[in-house]
Length: 482
Figure 1: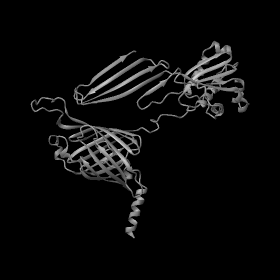
Figure 2: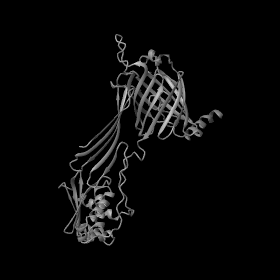
Figure 3: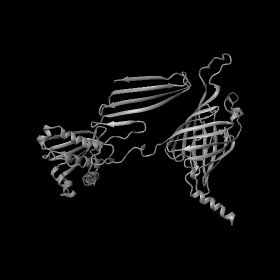
Figure 4: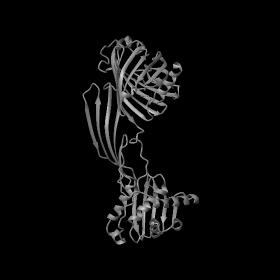
């Protein structure tokens, strides 16, 4: 009886356990200490960090592009091994630094964890280039209670069977203990005798980990040496990083409408109308009033439906129109080219419809649509007309929100009423094996302002900071006006 109950107890513990921790190994791939496991970081997670275990120091970056696919890049420094050597000239390459190599790794999930079945993945390390760290492997991971067990087999640099366990006690919060059997064949590494890696044998390794939503670190011991792996983690699918597609709220504030004479005498009336359109993310806005007709040309990238966008615009135009207005016309443009023109021929009836005093059936004959394509479908025109009029009936909040774009991951952007775009784009770029030093990276901040139509850049300002390893820091500011 006890033997029969034991598997049930283990299964029950695993069923109620939290999701297993998926943390990077020293190579940047999700794994244990140095060995990979079958786990994957949440979809859209980008990590970048640095790991060190004498004689290896690696800068790495990984991305979980899909729930079942992970790719990573590494730049590894092999300490005590010169990058270049010439027996005839001992001074050749002496000041260049240690040997360095670039690697690309990937891992693919074959089967997800279900019931008693473990999660199974296959992967490869150092697929291109010199192939100094090439390895292929298959690995399985299974969570049982607070323990995540891993067992795998590899070829080339991962020489044979490997495995390990990660223990994440619930009472410890974000802390975990990890242990593994390291199956790397260190004696076959590049210049292993010179670097000291030839003395490393297959054997156990263990460490302690801390993880949070945005960063993590791991301290461990292996082969009689202390190692560390630290990283930052960016959840690219978190709300603040996903492009915002929610429609902006409509402008519903009630305004005193001017007369034709007041509209012509004071440009502030037109400016208030343009600001109200801009608050709803309308762009490329042009407004004019002549002979009782209020006309606007505009576009909108936040409202997916063109008829609904036009209905929102016409509703706003009606709220600011002169009292004598007889007709409202809205031309919707895409890339500054007219796409369709909506003509509301009876503005007074439109106002009655907006106030709930007229039916849609009575208003529909006074609305016409002219498309840029002459072969526009009659049924489509009727559907677009209905959707545009429905925008007048939407129960929307009565507040004015100023539309300021949220910062993107690598760009801060602001548009103006006429479609001009201002951007500030911080960036970082790296250069490996550069003759001037072992590793170099540039950090730049670029600001531009583009006109809406000609798209000529007439302002450009750049500030660049360049840092070299083993060389004094160099600051290179530059400013240009184009």
